[in-house]
Length: 323
Image (cartoon, rainbow, N blue to C red):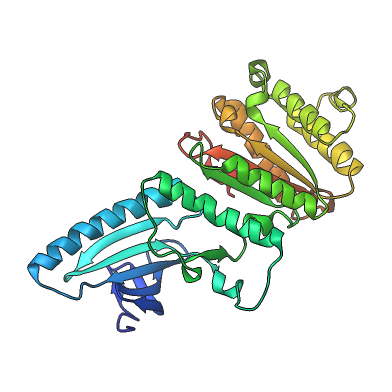
């Protein structure tokens, strides 16, 4: 089962560890030599037991169908591992998938150990939401078991509790992004955070006509969500630029007024992408706040969750929103 360790497939995927095996093949951990940092990936080696031409033809067809399904599901849902490559060598088949850094649910569900109703409900909800999506794609998962259900080592629930956290939830429409955002905000509330939810589709079109109007709307809406008084007239004065005024509004008012961490849930931000100049300045500002949080205690209290749809083109320098 471990005869591939040390082998480099396609001059790119260097296998270094065996993760397990079964009736259909073996699974390995590899490094992608073509990418910076040589990130880890999973290689699944599928080898037909019968190498006759007739069986090989059927195996090839099934392999192509499986790869197409995995590619489609992985690109459409952020809780399903992405397919990076699929290929055939010497009558044997290989799938290269995203590596999920975490543990399977056998580490959490142990025979004889009980769980509270709340924990069980949340666990089932998390699993069934993904399964429902798979069924909506006319796919049936035939091997659902604890060993095949992974918990990421550091998921968004854990991340949002970190000082200065910045999370991006990106997926196509109707894939449960808002539902996940709601659960993240609720998790923050349960851990002593103040939360504010802002749906950018609620903004009037006139607010997107200039950065100044947009940032005033943004600050005013967040203050309202946090049940604080509107003090725009006090902070929106002088010769400073709009981004400086917005930063002062958060630093000297919102973050100073509330002593607990603040989680901002920014939903449907695709709306901003239609206005490239506003979008570039706004997301650059969020990125600057995130960087500031690494050094300034006040900004460590601010945590951001940004939600948008995968199919929408983002006219931004990718380094400005490196999440």
